Image 1: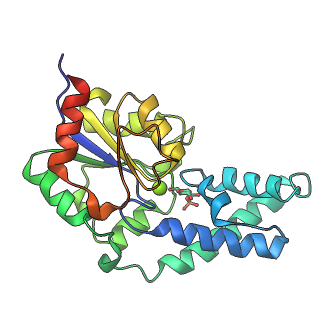
Image 2 (image 1 turned 30 degrees about the vertical axis):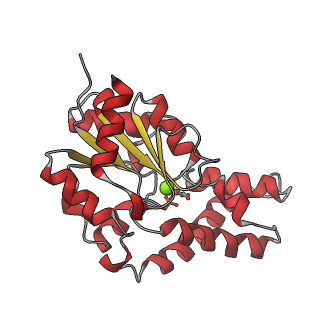
Length: 225
Ligand code: BG6
Ligand code: MG
């Protein structure tokens, strides 16, 4: 069957709002306390990666992967989450990234379903603070996902819950791991950010401001023809 655009599945952090920056600041604060040098460049590798996996990567970066017990690591991850939750307390609908509201409007006008596929356990809090929870047909519960991105599981789960086949879906991501996940799910991938990092994406925008529904739809159909 010829694919038909039926659903768009969004990542949250760094796509709908700039919480990617808040994750960065929270990890940076924890790394500082641990005496681990943490850079924006390294942070790119953590985008789309779960909290515990991110912590493991930071500990490896600092050569401290054997310095903590599992319980201690849980406490460190909780501490990062406390910092992060403090930062997201002030989020309002004003923090929706430019172009996203217009894009959502166009999707609704065209009868395209919407899914949210974020591995963040804070996704529901963030999307509620943005007053966007009601816009989504499906919000995948990160707690029920076994494998994080780059595994396609979360995107496949979203498609399944939306009752659409992956070939009829577009995924939107700012993370390299996220684009890999979308492609592994068999979906058309739209990347937001750096062209060099998101090479696997089918279409890339430097920022959300540039997103154009008509252009994305045309690219989807021309890739499938
Ligand atoms: C992803 C972010 O969306 O969620 C990652 O890109 C983050 O940076 C991950 O680590 C998990 O988020 P949380 O809120 O469960 O710690
Ligand atoms: Mg993201």
